[in-house]
Length: 198
Image 1 (cartoon, rainbow, N blue to C red):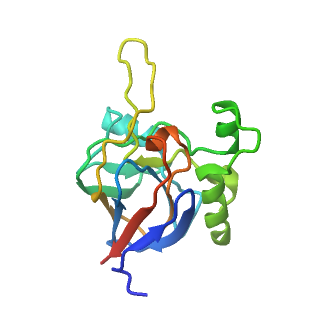
Image 2 (cartoon, rainbow, N blue to C red):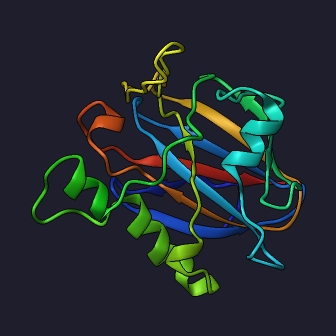
């Protein structure tokens, strides 16, 4: 497979793959208004994982975009955003799961969600479900009320063909999904595209 080829993640599914230091990962929303959950691990020590808390603490803001680094739980930069055509992503909310759909949506036979999709995709790399962190939710739109702290999940601002591009700052294992939550994706499930380049 040519690593520069565009790959498709089917709706409500997920994949995992390796990314070498210096390579670029482009995540593309081909149809618009579709979230992609992204997690990253140090390939040589999977105890080191992307960290929402450290990244947002060091950035002093919750909306990240071009130029911003994504830190690990050990305060090392794992990824850096080098291009962003949307400018609104979420790094607060955990991957949706069967429990999400049971508790929030009241589903009696819930889908396994992004959490379950990530768990299945990452298992061949020896990464257990309990090691899945808060994801960087590409294109997810979560406004915050500055007075009350209330948050809402609104339709993504991404339109067909919008993208966010990351550079790997070390050798990584990446988990990536096409999000499974109706509310996050303005009521429909769509694919996500991605591309890896030197």
